[in-house]
Length: 321
Ligand code: UDP
Ligand code: MG
Image 1 (cartoon, rainbow, N blue to C red):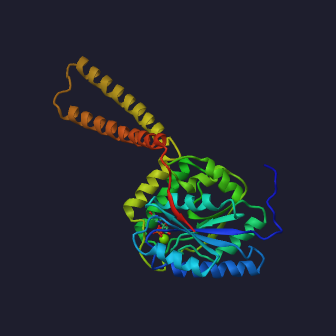
Image 2 (cartoon, protein in one colour):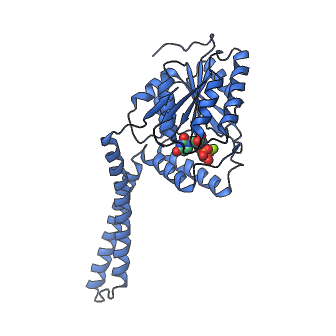
Image 3 (cartoon, rainbow, N blue to C red):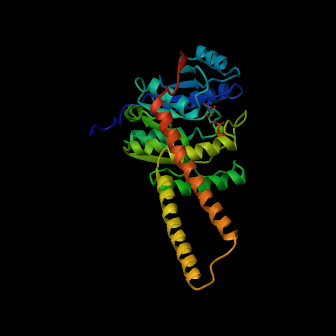
């Protein structure tokens, strides 16, 4: 597509905010975002009718009531209520796909505003300069505990080895124009890993860097278990490298086994055949462990295929205001 994104006119922006049990924080966050929108409108970066869309991802607290109340007081606030908890990425696409027909640029940001809101201006400037996707990149993780930081560092190293388009330090704080979101909609996969998908879509992109802040209120919805599963999802949704690794391990083990066999034959011919079951037990346990791990990895991909072929809807919208 050769069309150049309009750079002169101000852009209608929709900020998608996924909310899961965020009653304590959503009111404050929307107020901050609205203030930011009007300051950007004053600079001519965004239109005065730019708006926020809060997506309630099946919260069990009073989040939806909060959203209804806020929306009542401002026509710049809209809301979507999902029928159940579909998870962060699904809540994001529910918001994006419901709004890309009426906005020029769509931004996703967490409800707790841990991502620096003042960066939005720089994101929009990039769009005015013709960029279509702008990734928010965390400069440091001072607010995260040490194990989380180390794990994150290792994870990015690993995932970049397998998929070099991954943007290091980028989570789900990004802006993209409506064309990009329309392209994203064509990716029908159920195993959604958005931070990997956007780089795949292509188009000119930019990064804006910021310091990650503390959660304003409430608690993290990503305990370690969920984080691990997100990391695993990141790898298995994007690359079949682990499957190839299984093959290479198998190949290596084949040569090891051949070596051991030669050694046994050689020893037998020299009159001192190898005795005892210790070596046997060692080989047996080693090989069965490797077999099991390999089966597990293959199983993971089979599980993914199972989910994909069922092709269940990624989200269900109960109410849209
Ligand atoms: N979230 C969601 N559905 C979920 C879990 C989380 O929509 O099932 C939202 C949550 O409300 C927040 C964002 O995803 O806006 C990120 O969650 P959180 O801030 O708890 O993650 P962390 O910053 O601790 O990684
Ligand atoms: Mg957070």
